[in-house]
Image: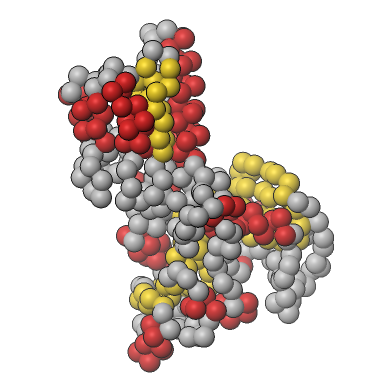
Length: 381
């Protein structure tokens, strides 16, 4: 931010951008695969228009705010959580709309990481004589779209590993029994995590043991920012099944939404049966004889998958951590003990000494019903 700008203007910029971020949050469960974006239009200290991106294919946040403001947008300042787009997609460029409306100043929280836009939208605005400012509440704006940003910058989705365990770190009894470790309140919280994800990833072991649905079971009216009559988007279900053991009778294949089964060197009769049951089959390269998880993540990014929720047993969870693919761990700790014979959280066979530990940074702890939700991120080397 320009240090020469009067403090009062800086404070105003922060306040209006904070409002734009609040608006962007309303699209948390609906905008995928597009980023969540909010916009506030201000003229002479008065908010004259607000908008947020609601659904992919519908107008962007800036367009909604301009519609509300009408002719009063001329000479106004636009506060946008992401650099306005400058390319034709399913909707026209927002830069054109801001220029045509006569906006005098545009304040952006961050540059768009999409190479089709990155810096070009701001340049187009400046060429039209519009003053621009970038970097107001940038960290908060980046937190809105971790998956979109990572997909654009690194070609992979953001992976959030969800786990539920007893206080002694156990996820299932030795027999495989695991329902229910966490409380109903924690399980409802997981439903919100699912609703905000592009895809839910699990392993074939979990499918064979539990026959999970891996769907969002909340009504639209139970999700913030959604109306009761909105359609709840079902994330893509992804099953890592290296050797094609997925049964064509799996429960998830009969539910609304898409299921992708990833394996290596498919057996024609088995993959044909899965496709007949409604699954899509993805042949992946091998790593240590199994599905190459890095290649799988890159393939998901090519499908515009922004955020992956990993819900699996210790083998796949450990493999994902070991491959450096997990960006965030969400652990629900239930107030009971399950004993030493029960299953653990991660299978990490390469760790034999204290120096080999996977270092984590705890970023949030919150009580959900009787359980604790611990959110952590792997520390960067």
